[in-house]
Length: 218
Length: 167
Image (cartoon, rainbow over all chains, first blue to last red; front, side, top):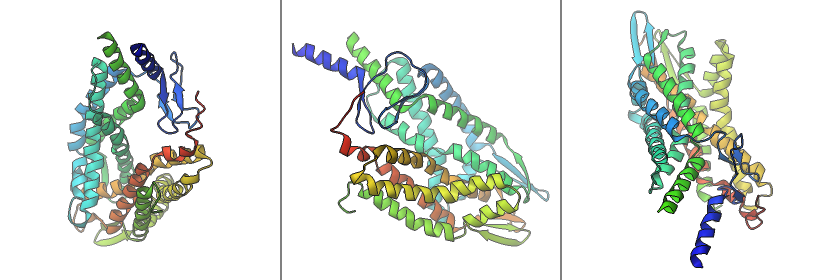
């Protein structure tokens, strides 16, 4: 009898969810309705508008990884002024503030433009790989890193910064875009697609469901 | 405030408010062109973009660097203040989520200064140097983000949790 009780409790847990923000118990939607799933009480998004496909998203993450190194090291912009020219990569921008009194700002740039985007890429790839292979992820740190890095990886904002810098530099020198800006633009675009489609709550639920299926099969 | 469950959020927010003052008063960068140097604050930089005939870019920078940090600090202060006896948690939760995500866009000016400083290095002919205002601004943005991070919207719904409606 206790085993029956445990099984029905597990079943109930599998079909319900507690909203992380307002603690409302919600029944998981049956079927694949269109549009994002939101908590009816506090409007928190609990699921993206699309089905989570680990295979495709992992492929996009691998593509982002290939673009990442050239995006870091190749020149973003090239400047020409009275016969002199200069160029700067994303790495150069970080180093520019890593000296003297501006060291904290430089460290912040290092954190938001290099460390966090890289952490985001590694964490999401690890989680998607686990979801693809139906392997449980025992450490909750991967999901924590993924959630944190979505907020603190700021290469998308940096891209807008490049656009503004180009307009500011217009009367100072001739500005030419470098190969780095193309790689960075594509890497940011792919990252945004992966982040939009791989919502952390949705990904966590998928992995929990897979873990339950594996346990049931045993 | 000391006994408040979100004392950390308050402390970080107050620190951010303090840093916002030098961030807006001190120059953020010096542009040297043809031997002449010109330092500019955030507001002056925005005005220069308007004068240069780029109102679109000027408005983006004005929103990201001037309005968003102030708006975020004000909204967070109101949300934290109302949290213990919150009567309309949905409104506060929506406001909190909005400022939580737009706040990171304030880093825009820090990135622009870093890029210009790395790129424009032609000695007296043309150069861009960062100034202390940018450090204060970066501190203010990060402290505001950390403050929002230390607060959980769950705290706005505490009073209503026993009364779950379920769906």
